[in-house]
Length: 135
Image 1 (tube, one colour):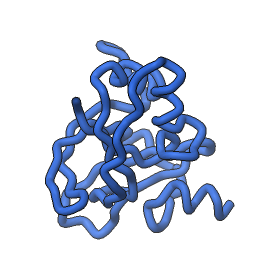
Image 2 (cartoon, one colour; image 1 turned 120 degrees about the vertical axis):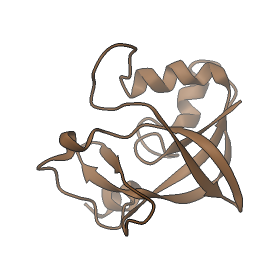
Image 3 (cartoon, one colour; image 1 turned 180 degrees about the vertical axis):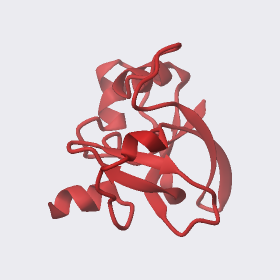
């Protein structure tokens, strides 16, 4: 089992809901550990957001959910985020440590390169779901 921090369309109720993605591929549903915030900035790419990571001493945070996932779900998430070995894309996979429910866990996450966010509107408050609903 691995952990993943999701901040955009993979969140529950969104178009790429991680639970429904697991269901579509007959993979065990992820276990939701909780909501947390991660240092970073969130940008609006139209139908989805992109997160740019930043040092923990930064003032901006991104809201997301932490899930424990079956290893079989990793290639599904990579496909959704269009992350392929040896191919430069918008999203990259990375590792980050987050605190959720008082526990520190190492998570997979999918930020974008800072250059990709150039000229995109920043999502104030760092919460994609709240932003999308307010539009």
